[in-house]
Image 1 (cartoon, rainbow, N blue to C red):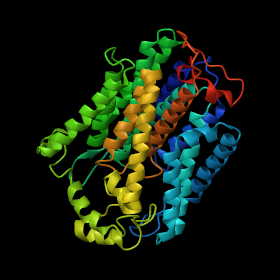
Image 2 (tube, rainbow, N blue to C red; image 1 turned 180 degrees about the vertical axis):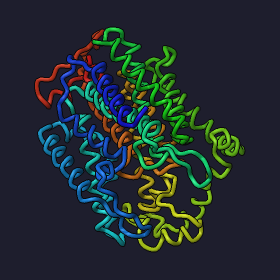
Image 3 (spheres, one colour; image 1 turned 90 degrees about the horizontal axis):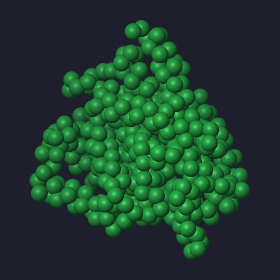
Length: 470
């Protein structure tokens, strides 16, 4: 099949997925397209590269260059996003309920006071703020459940099939220096492809489980066909990407979602606590008892996690300040990358561990804030689980896999798909918890609740928002 014909077939196929998944009963804001476009950009290569404009050369230790076209596009999306959330008065309540995230963003900004490259750090901080704006557009929609579904579908229907097209028909597959095949898809490397596939396929699995569970959802049959097709594409891409961390993260998240959907667990938070504790203790004991080598080999990795342990041994002593770090996103500038290259004999631009990456840039204080965000998000996800096990199970899966994914990859870096979905889960879970606190004691949940909004403020006080019919 020629590349032009393959492109035509895939465009028609993507259009077919959108057609099958349409749902006229949902009344979501058109602004949901903003975070969709944002993730199309974040989850793939720069737009300037797709348009043949070229990409500026990146030199280790120097300030990274970005195309003016890409900067303008991102800035325009941020501007539109800010205009949208300014008109939603309940944004303040959602942010107040997610106070650890605000604290973290504030500390990132303050950390530039002791950074050697405050201008670059500030530019990265503004871009990270754009991700928060995009998340708020989804979370504060009048019909948040429907907005969440549409957001996941629209992002997945483009990025995942386009990656298959890129690998199979556009000749994007390659080989790394060790001789292993690498398939970057629409991203710049196999780990990037593994990340976008893992987070989007996990969301697709949630949609499939939701459709299977509720037989009264409108247009269920054709929507189920679209989501099952996307799920199959995602599973194939996980295999093609050869990213052990992403594959293991998806398996963990899928297992957690399936387990929380069992009648045995139902709406019992104690059972969820026990399950999560068992997973964490099982992993810790496996590593402590010398099982790391066996686990790494089972995942297709070497005993040193493909050189990661050596990287960590070199980087940890290089932290400029163990308490407050080098300053937000500025550790990898200046002389340090060259020193790391001298010791490793190859170039890297991240620690391949989210916790060490945060430690290098923000110190132990930053690590404490990350732990606070994860704990707060977990608490909120448990609150959401009490109301709706399927939706709460997705939040739990994203938060737990974010914690485990960052053991081998720097997923807390902003912007990035891993961080975006962690933010999305924590803010959505916080909104669910805030709604539960405002729930009238005389309210009884109907068998098939509906979601009615008369204005922006009532959406925060309506206790049935998590169960909106979509």
